Length: 236
Image (cartoon, rainbow, N blue to C red; front, side, top):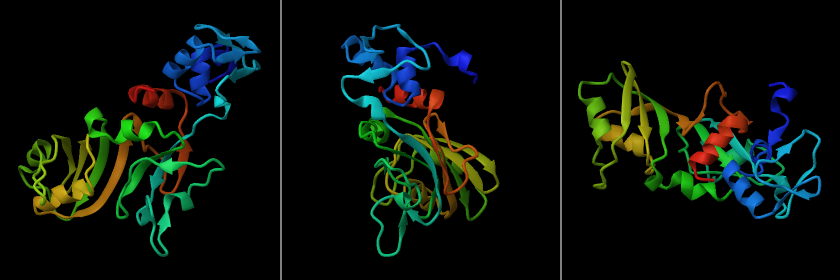
């Protein structure tokens, strides 16, 4: 996008664009008199030019970081043992960041890393019904009734019945599933209960954040509309 299409920019959009706070949080800070433009206390609706100096009374200028990472198979999310490799051995940042949630060692795909502790419960708590989508390859062809059973919920070996989900068959032995909860190794346990085994399990989406063309072991810093929608959906 060309510079003239961005500036002048509303102060709340500017703060979100710079990954400092969400628009909603920016409005709260502006109303509280904690945002300054060129030394002047900002008002709701104020616009910022590219070279303006924007400061906060709360020292938020360092910003918060949100990273989409494609975790390879064999990499541990948290607490590696022995010679195991963890995500933070691959993703190097000067600022301290951490993975939100987990993706088991044998699975791969999208996981979000951040230095914003506010999002952990908002993203992981199943009460909020946030979508997470996976692509799953099985060891044999999908039989009639499999999709409906998965969608309606599976009683796992510990007696827990999974919440309803959205399932779509996309090949003879491949399907996608969208969950709003995340029990430990849940999809693998659901599949096992129906007499199948998982050959490959990849997370392709978390809410509006998509894995897209991000290759294994690579990451991108979330920004712009993707980040803004993600934070707004979390109520931040």
